[in-house]
Amino acid sequence: MLEIVGELPMNRREAIKSLGIALGLSLSPALVRALSNPELSVHEKPLDQQYAKLIEVLSELVIPTTDTPGAIAAGVPEFINGIVSNWYTPAERDIFLSGLVDLNAEAQQQYGAPYVDLTEGQQILLLEAAELAASEYQSDDGMAMMLNLDEDLSPFFIKLKELVIVGYYTSEIGASQELNYNPMPMSYKGDIPLTDVGRAWAVDGPL
Image 1 (cartoon, helix red, strand yellow):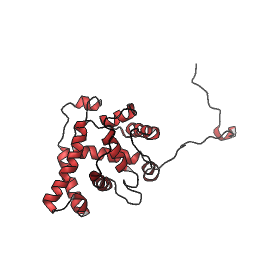
Image 2 (spheres, one colour):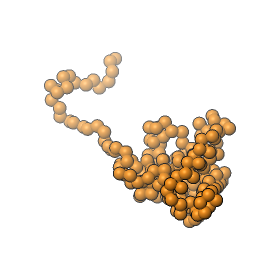
Image 3 (cartoon, one colour):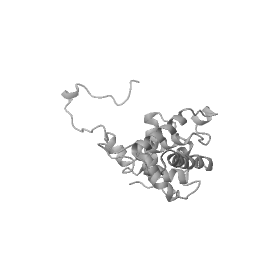
Image 4 (cartoon, one colour):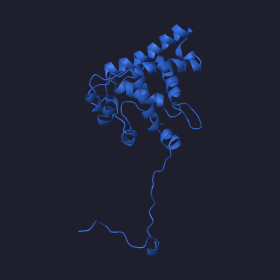
């Protein structure tokens, strides 16, 4: 299990970079800060325990356990805690935490119970409503966001989805069990008969 407390482990930093390159992702400013300044954090204070169970439930709804382990088993809640606690700006952190509070308030209003106590179907309906609201969001400064030059003021659901996906696919479980993993995709054969290849390989191009 990779833990994020104050500093992002080197192997996970490299995995996040690779994920962004491979999928063509534009990482949020918070993740860029975590990659470029691992020794510099904004808060260095874990989220209140009241949010822990809610983040667990939401993470598992985004990437549930199927024939492969889900978000909880991959340590995604701890990853989210680390990023929000250490690298979100006050504005980003407020948006994320307000989103958690709003989900709970909506659960109480519609179903008379906290979000974590609802049925999975009820939880999904409320999360889909948050997704629909977030789909209408457009950054006021698209170029700044694309270049990661500003803080990310996108809605709660967008932040949640990014954190779950990046946290999951840069974990050992996500990278080696949900994805196909081959640490050495090629093989080295030091002794091959020339007849097998027909001719030798040039070391460099023509002069």
